[in-house]
Length: 181
Image 1: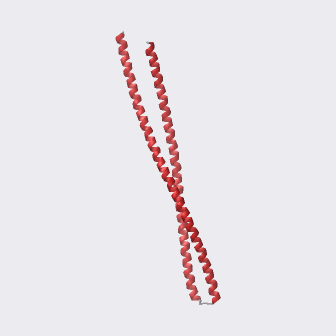
Image 2: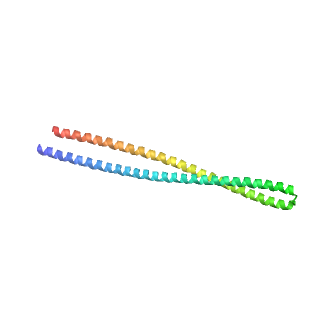
Image 3: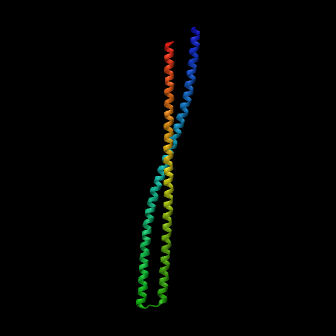
Protein backbone atom coordinates (compact mmCIF):
# COMPACT_ATOMS: atom_id res chain seq x y z
CA UNK A 1 0.00 0.00 0.00
CA UNK A 2 2.86 2.31 0.87
CA UNK A 3 4.53 1.56 -2.46
CA UNK A 4 1.28 2.34 -4.31
CA UNK A 5 1.02 5.73 -2.57
CA UNK A 6 4.68 6.48 -3.32
CA UNK A 7 4.18 5.60 -6.98
CA UNK A 8 1.00 7.66 -7.10
CA UNK A 9 2.83 10.58 -5.47
CA UNK A 10 5.61 10.34 -8.06
CA UNK A 11 3.10 10.36 -10.94
CA UNK A 12 1.27 13.33 -9.45
CA UNK A 13 4.61 15.15 -8.96
CA UNK A 14 5.55 14.44 -12.57
CA UNK A 15 2.13 15.67 -13.68
CA UNK A 16 2.63 18.89 -11.74
CA UNK A 17 6.06 19.28 -13.30
CA UNK A 18 4.53 18.89 -16.75
CA UNK A 19 1.85 21.47 -15.87
CA UNK A 20 4.55 23.81 -14.57
CA UNK A 21 6.60 23.44 -17.79
CA UNK A 22 3.52 24.06 -19.95
CA UNK A 23 2.62 27.10 -17.85
CA UNK A 24 6.18 28.39 -18.03
CA UNK A 25 6.23 28.09 -21.84
CA UNK A 26 2.85 29.78 -22.13
CA UNK A 27 3.96 32.64 -19.91
CA UNK A 28 7.18 32.93 -21.89
CA UNK A 29 5.18 33.29 -25.10
CA UNK A 30 2.94 35.88 -23.46
CA UNK A 31 5.96 37.84 -22.21
CA UNK A 32 7.42 37.74 -25.73
CA UNK A 33 4.11 38.98 -27.12
CA UNK A 34 4.03 41.80 -24.54
CA UNK A 35 7.63 42.74 -25.43
CA UNK A 36 6.65 42.83 -29.10
CA UNK A 37 3.68 45.07 -28.29
CA UNK A 38 5.93 47.39 -26.27
CA UNK A 39 8.37 47.61 -29.21
CA UNK A 40 5.53 48.39 -31.60
CA UNK A 41 4.22 51.02 -29.19
CA UNK A 42 7.65 52.62 -28.99
CA UNK A 43 7.92 52.64 -32.80
CA UNK A 44 4.46 54.20 -33.12
CA UNK A 45 5.38 56.87 -30.55
CA UNK A 46 8.57 57.65 -32.45
CA UNK A 47 6.63 57.97 -35.70
CA UNK A 48 4.04 60.20 -34.01
CA UNK A 49 6.75 62.47 -32.58
CA UNK A 50 8.39 62.73 -36.01
CA UNK A 51 5.05 63.53 -37.62
CA UNK A 52 4.38 66.24 -35.03
CA UNK A 53 7.81 67.71 -35.65
CA UNK A 54 7.11 67.78 -39.40
CA UNK A 55 3.76 69.45 -38.75
CA UNK A 56 5.51 72.21 -36.80
CA UNK A 57 8.03 72.63 -39.62
CA UNK A 58 5.27 72.81 -42.21
CA UNK A 59 3.43 75.38 -40.12
CA UNK A 60 6.56 77.52 -40.05
CA UNK A 61 6.92 77.09 -43.82
CA UNK A 62 3.28 78.07 -44.34
CA UNK A 63 3.82 81.19 -42.21
CA UNK A 64 6.90 82.06 -44.27
CA UNK A 65 4.99 81.55 -47.53
CA UNK A 66 2.13 83.68 -46.21
CA UNK A 67 4.60 86.50 -45.50
CA UNK A 68 6.04 86.13 -49.01
CA UNK A 69 2.53 86.28 -50.40
CA UNK A 70 1.85 89.50 -48.49
CA UNK A 71 5.08 91.00 -49.85
CA UNK A 72 4.17 90.00 -53.41
CA UNK A 73 0.71 91.52 -53.01
CA UNK A 74 2.28 94.73 -51.69
CA UNK A 75 4.61 94.82 -54.69
CA UNK A 76 1.66 94.21 -56.97
CA UNK A 77 -0.21 97.15 -55.47
CA UNK A 78 2.92 99.30 -55.75
CA UNK A 79 3.45 98.35 -59.38
CA UNK A 80 -0.24 99.00 -60.13
CA UNK A 81 0.02 102.47 -58.57
CA UNK A 82 3.21 103.14 -60.49
CA UNK A 83 1.50 102.05 -63.68
CA UNK A 84 -1.40 104.38 -62.94
CA UNK A 85 0.96 107.26 -62.16
CA UNK A 86 2.97 106.69 -65.32
CA UNK A 87 -0.16 106.60 -67.43
CA UNK A 88 -1.43 109.86 -65.90
CA UNK A 89 1.98 111.54 -66.26
CA UNK A 90 2.29 110.57 -69.91
CA UNK A 91 -1.03 112.20 -70.75
CA UNK A 92 -0.20 115.32 -68.72
CA UNK A 93 3.27 115.87 -70.12
CA UNK A 94 2.45 115.09 -73.66
CA UNK A 95 5.46 112.85 -74.16
CA UNK A 96 5.37 110.67 -77.17
CA UNK A 97 3.08 107.70 -76.96
CA UNK A 98 5.68 105.28 -78.28
CA UNK A 99 8.05 105.87 -75.33
CA UNK A 100 5.33 105.44 -72.71
CA UNK A 101 3.88 102.46 -74.47
CA UNK A 102 7.24 100.74 -74.19
CA UNK A 103 7.47 101.56 -70.46
CA UNK A 104 3.88 100.48 -69.99
CA UNK A 105 4.62 97.18 -71.66
CA UNK A 106 7.63 96.66 -69.38
CA UNK A 107 5.54 97.39 -66.27
CA UNK A 108 2.79 95.09 -67.52
CA UNK A 109 5.32 92.30 -68.05
CA UNK A 110 6.55 92.90 -64.52
CA UNK A 111 2.97 92.80 -63.28
CA UNK A 112 2.34 89.53 -65.09
CA UNK A 113 5.55 88.06 -63.66
CA UNK A 114 4.49 89.17 -60.20
CA UNK A 115 1.05 87.64 -60.69
CA UNK A 116 2.63 84.37 -61.87
CA UNK A 117 4.90 84.37 -58.81
CA UNK A 118 1.85 85.01 -56.65
CA UNK A 119 0.05 82.07 -58.29
CA UNK A 120 3.05 79.77 -57.68
CA UNK A 121 3.14 80.76 -54.01
CA UNK A 122 -0.58 80.02 -53.66
CA UNK A 123 -0.04 76.57 -55.24
CA UNK A 124 2.84 75.88 -52.87
CA UNK A 125 0.63 76.77 -49.89
CA UNK A 126 -2.11 74.44 -51.18
CA UNK A 127 0.41 71.61 -51.59
CA UNK A 128 1.75 72.09 -48.08
CA UNK A 129 -1.79 72.13 -46.69
CA UNK A 130 -2.51 68.83 -48.44
CA UNK A 131 0.65 67.28 -46.99
CA UNK A 132 -0.23 68.46 -43.48
CA UNK A 133 -3.76 67.08 -43.85
CA UNK A 134 -2.47 63.67 -44.94
CA UNK A 135 -0.03 63.60 -42.03
CA UNK A 136 -2.80 64.46 -39.59
CA UNK A 137 -4.89 61.56 -40.86
CA UNK A 138 -1.85 59.25 -40.57
CA UNK A 139 -1.37 60.38 -36.97
CA UNK A 140 -5.03 59.67 -36.20
CA UNK A 141 -4.66 56.17 -37.64
CA UNK A 142 -1.53 55.61 -35.57
CA UNK A 143 -3.33 56.74 -32.41
CA UNK A 144 -6.19 54.33 -33.12
CA UNK A 145 -3.72 51.48 -33.67
CA UNK A 146 -1.96 52.39 -30.44
CA UNK A 147 -5.24 52.26 -28.53
CA UNK A 148 -6.06 48.89 -30.08
CA UNK A 149 -2.65 47.49 -29.13
CA UNK A 150 -3.10 48.69 -25.55
CA UNK A 151 -6.50 46.99 -25.39
CA UNK A 152 -5.02 43.73 -26.72
CA UNK A 153 -2.25 43.92 -24.14
CA UNK A 154 -4.77 44.49 -21.34
CA UNK A 155 -6.87 41.54 -22.51
CA UNK A 156 -3.80 39.27 -22.63
CA UNK A 157 -2.81 40.30 -19.10
CA UNK A 158 -6.36 39.72 -17.82
CA UNK A 159 -6.36 36.21 -19.35
CA UNK A 160 -2.95 35.51 -17.85
CA UNK A 161 -4.13 36.57 -14.39
CA UNK A 162 -7.24 34.39 -14.69
CA UNK A 163 -5.15 31.37 -15.68
CA UNK A 164 -2.75 31.96 -12.82
CA UNK A 165 -5.65 32.12 -10.34
CA UNK A 166 -7.01 28.86 -11.76
CA UNK A 167 -3.65 27.13 -11.35
CA UNK A 168 -3.28 28.50 -7.83
CA UNK A 169 -6.73 27.19 -6.92
CA UNK A 170 -5.79 23.81 -8.40
CA UNK A 171 -2.59 23.72 -6.35
CA UNK A 172 -4.53 24.65 -3.19
CA UNK A 173 -7.02 21.85 -3.88
CA UNK A 174 -4.17 19.44 -4.45
CA UNK A 175 -2.47 20.51 -1.22
CA UNK A 176 -5.71 20.07 0.72
CA UNK A 177 -6.18 16.66 -0.86
CA UNK A 178 -2.59 15.68 -0.05
CA UNK A 179 -3.02 16.81 3.58
CA UNK A 180 -6.27 14.96 3.98
CA UNK A 181 -4.65 11.68 2.87
